[in-house]
Each structure stands twice: as structure tokens, then as C-alpha cells.
Length: 82
Image (cartoon, rainbow, N blue to C red; front, side):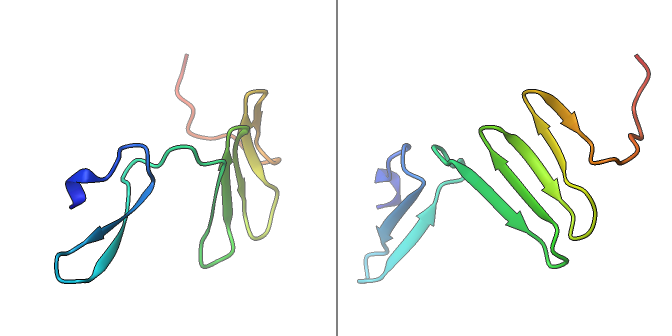
């Protein structure tokens, strides 16, 4: 019964009533240490408690941490006044 999945779990297994089991993933994931994504062209994004780092397949990584922004030598654009 999907309504009995706990709110603390990121994954759950639910029976559909016909002997089949379905794995369900929560919409809001919690307790993760690191999330790494990579697209088809090799650009990688890593997010963890220390910040976010975007590493293009070619070029310098850009990171945002508690210490500030390392823009990887890129030009900062589209900044509003103020």
C-alpha cells in the first residue's frame, strides 16, 4: 500500500496486489551526501554539503561554496544593478 510508505525513506517497495512489486522513489530526497549528474556531452555537476561544482567537458570548473564563487575564469554576465 503506497500510503504506508514512510516519509523518512527515499525508496520504498510497494505491492500492486497481484504479486508484483514496484520500487518507488520519493519526490523529496533526504539524507544524501552527494549528487552527481553528467550530460551526454560530458558536463558534470556535483552537489554536496560543501556546495555545487559545475565542470564542463572542456574548460574550468565553476563552484559555489560557503567561501564564495569561483567562476573558473569565466566572464560574469547578466547581473542586475544594485
